[in-house]
Length: 253
Image (tube, rainbow, N blue to C red; front, top):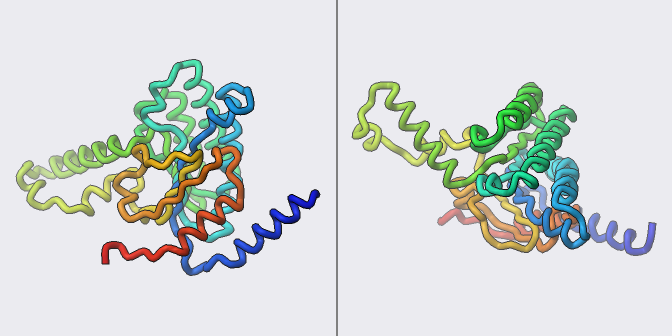
């Protein structure tokens, strides 16, 4: 171990020690961005970048566990990503399938799929559903894997499900509209039954949501990190937690 590693380790331990445990987030959402640019910078193909990003996920989840996080949402594939070339999309889907299956195989976390899986190839959708089913008995941290996810699509799906549910009870459109509450839509989102994310992290230096958790992130805190996702370090995560803990969340009051 070199002196740089020793200095880094000491700094990491100090940041971790100074974190106020009572002010840490329950739900952390992460936009795993920058895999392709990470690969390009190394002269490698995009699949290499996607695999490197997938290999980082379990490490992040252990960091979240250590910090007492109860819910994690990982954006692995957007609805826009589905328009990529078949040459890139096919291996990416297989990488996602394998990554989610590996998470399920640990038995540590309860997995949920957040996304329009009807847009995915049948083989991918079935693989994700098998992984989710295998974790039903887990009492560990809940991990949402956002695949074929788009924030506008999620809201549209929630409203559609809400209307169909009420229509099945014989209610008219006027009756549905008269009784509609914000909570009614929230109860039909992909993350229904879960608290909204307290902290949203985006890697790669981009500073926009890109449609991620548009409804749920209304009062979230945001942290933008310059590192590409495969280079995201424990200390980067700790800095995000420290930044979150240092903010005064007033929720409009």
